[in-house]
Image 1 (cartoon, chains in turn brown, purple, orange):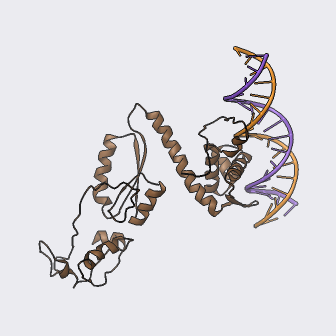
Image 2 (cartoon, chains in turn orange, green, yellow):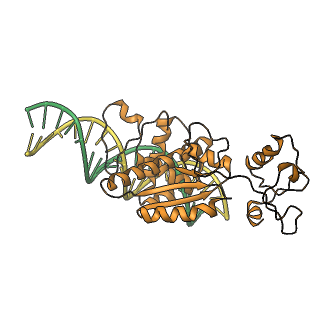
Image 3 (spheres, rainbow, N blue to C red):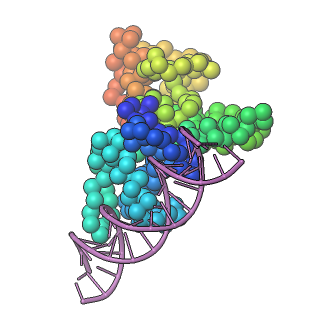
Length: 254
DNA sequence: TGTACGTTGAGAAGCTACGG
DNA sequence: CCGTAGCTTCTCAACGTACA
């Protein structure tokens, strides 16, 4: 949540607010002006894009700066604007707020009708190609009015994205998922070893961990993933040969 | 010096609250 | 119900600044 500010949910027209409190708020419209100006690094271009005058953009930014007490932009005369670190942080949250407001509007419009709006989800790349297509297709068939937006990330970025509200849903492993995130197990995956057809261990129904340590391994070198698989060995007092670290797509190919 | 761009000031328009 | 006051937001014009 945005702390210390009180955005007004007005759309179009003015919202008269008497008294000194009125100067302590800003509107979603002003937030949108700020975000677009930040994205384009220009008041002029933002004004063109939003079909308003330059002073309107400038005034909106100043209002937000006054309310928050933050300097959001560094002004470069005749050279546009650049976001300050505070401006970047606020813009990130402002985008979320605008998205939520848009979602709320769509939700309100869809009340009494079928489910609509946008569902943003993210998945771990190694099993995203395996499970997501079928899941997404079934979901789209059932809820055709929902726009699905899907990303692929490593475990650390997935957890961060959920925490920041960038995504509503994630498909990933149960690795260091914070308590504040609801985790529902869908599948249980036993670890598999994939070997070449002419490998000494080829053709076996099962392989013991101790048998694997003698051979070099290929592991996905992503945050937590590599540590997780190595921990399976160390938990049993085993030390595998130094694994190589290819790209995720190389792993998929292997 | 011309051009591009952001800011400032003045005035208009639109909205709501309030009182008669 | 209507007129007025107060407020916000908008546009236009002018100005200041930086760069080629």
